[in-house]
Length: 444
Image (cartoon, rainbow, N blue to C red):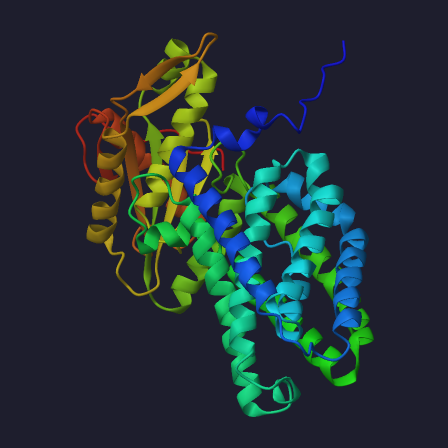
């Protein structure tokens, strides 16, 4: 039986109404602000438009469409590999439009770029239209900010003087800052103070930010070439952009191979590769490092009482708790089952056994305070899982071993000693515990 598709003209069925109230209010406010800014831009269009403005607009729009079509398969695979927000590289064309055209005309390029992206890359993957509208509105406002900055320099000097270069660089920063603030603003959870840690989590990995600035820089180069030699020079950007698309896809595929699907942490193989490198860096820096092995106590009871779907949510919550208590450069992985591993890479010498114990105790306490609420069943009902505990063992480099396998074995043995001591405890290194023999070694 064929399921009828919802009527897009039925406003009451739009997915946007399912957003939380604060998020919906932010999305509507950004869209309305964008509409108001565009009206003002249209009313303030100069009587004398830049030379070749129509040709420039058409070339940017066509180049963006060709770039999307050439990288269509790559873009779809990126979406399917990683559903989280990512840089789509279209800012090459939208920033070039901001640098070469008045704000209202640059907005036309944004609408064409995002309309084509939605029709060809995002709609087949069922990306909700309101996400595309918000993204396009955020980019339009970013373009307007950049256009206001570049307008401070005469177009004839914009790409030919040191002052012009500085102004274009400021426009690039304005574009990135407005886009970042709008995206982070709508993603900050309700009631959460937007502290620096929140910003870092929402912005994603550092290489995503580097990729965004690289893409904007390419847009500035494209604008400079088009201004100096003619709009047709935008064609030379296309091969570079296609290669960049492929490079980004390879990176995402590599990350997917190293990522545990249930928790988003490194899997065992990925953690071992990165931890080995980090340990070698600690050795070269003559610094200490500590491996922690964590095991959730009585986790089988959670699966037996509530089912594996609830158990998976508990694993994800524990993973998030562990990540929240360590530094960004520390490595957290899942070894399988209910066992996790952490490398505290003390390159600055701050992870001696006492400091490692402090971190482990913070992790233990945070997990003990967890309350995981999961909605299951039909009709839906909420299940709350609390009173979770973990046993944690640790081994320190170089005192407990000089190789990663020795540290993991030592931490695993210490973890079993913590379990035999009554669970919900921390053991770092070789600590005598009554009746505690060596536990089994990990499969890794």
